[in-house]
Length: 266
Image (cartoon, rainbow, N blue to C red):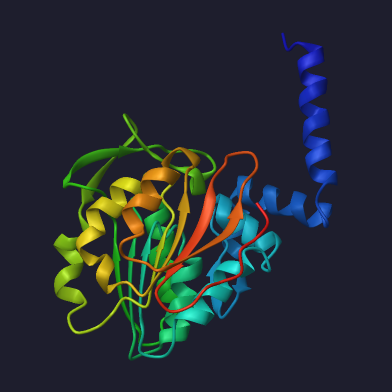
């Protein structure tokens, strides 16, 4: 039998969460469509790209508010241009990948990594939806500091999956193995890393390529900040702190050798 006090607290928490939203009815609808799978009937615009509304947390969030995460899109616009090269490690459903495709165009190149098999399927379908002749190289692998078989969590909120001791079996590689011969004679204009706490291993796996990266946009877990700063300071002259999550302590950094973005209050 459900404890009535616990049940009331849970209901109160849900109601409070809904009331915090600017558009509570659309928020509820987004969750209904997501949970029932009816979401697949819809597409939506995000930045320059069209996106499928897949049964995923990020799809639901962006369908509900396609102006969410505009700071991410601004970084793409400031760092990429036609014919450029964008690398996305932790691409999820491809919201930034597809926008980068639109910016760099048919003479540009986009390379992206997403280890979760289901989310990777979503990524491929969004890439196909936004095909504009851009050369895109998607990979269903995780970047790490060495090549091995690893495990990825399979959380309901699929934008929060992490490298773990058990879960879905995935292939982990160093980026140098697969990127070195694909970026000959060109710089990586922007590399984005969002890997839920695995960022140090990723940076160690791509360290030989960091001299070729003009700008790096990365989310860093609080416990990794000191090591992150020591590892990157020899490759980038300018560091901008874009945001800090009060609950998790995660920090979004933008590193570059060419320009600085405004620091946010943290």
